[in-house]
Amino acid sequence: MVCYPDQVKVNQAIAIRDGIRWHRGCITGIEGDMARIALKDWGRHILRPLHECHRLPLRFHELSWQAVACSLSRVSPMQPSGNWSFETRQMAKAIAEHQNGKIKIRKGDDNGAFVDLIIDNHPDEGYYDVKDILIKMGYIQSAPKSFKSEMYPGLTRRP
Figure 1 (cartoon, one colour):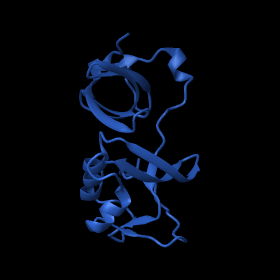
Figure 2 (tube, rainbow, N blue to C red):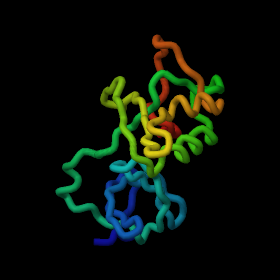
Figure 3 (cartoon, rainbow, N blue to C red):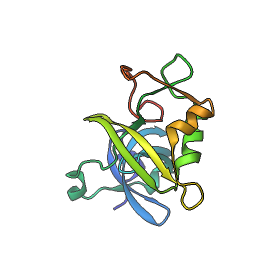
Figure 4 (cartoon, rainbow, N blue to C red):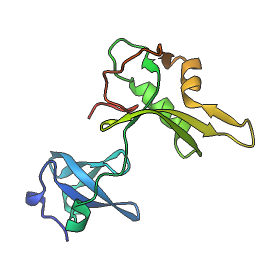
């Protein structure tokens, strides 16, 4: 069932079509006749017209969001701000998106997980660690084992 634009509110859980699939989402902002939507099961954000927002059936409200925010373990940004730069986020996405690999969880809590991300480049060159590639390219730096991250887990902007 479609939500009327005047019924859509910030923090409202909704159903939204993204391509040919339906997803659960949460309205994070309204800008005129457009809604900013967090696809929390996928860890992505999209912008859609308000008239494309649909009521989420009640049975889907009972499910927890399925995505877990992750950050690469034992690394820190090159700049002192504590936030990952746009260029670093884009490079990590270019290296890892749509690739097969494995995730080794180093530490997890209710807010997310710190992980090692290993990409399978088989049969060409075997496996490679995304963290090592980003360090070699100068986007991030190694952090000591005692490093305590104060930032929100994820190679993304803060929520």
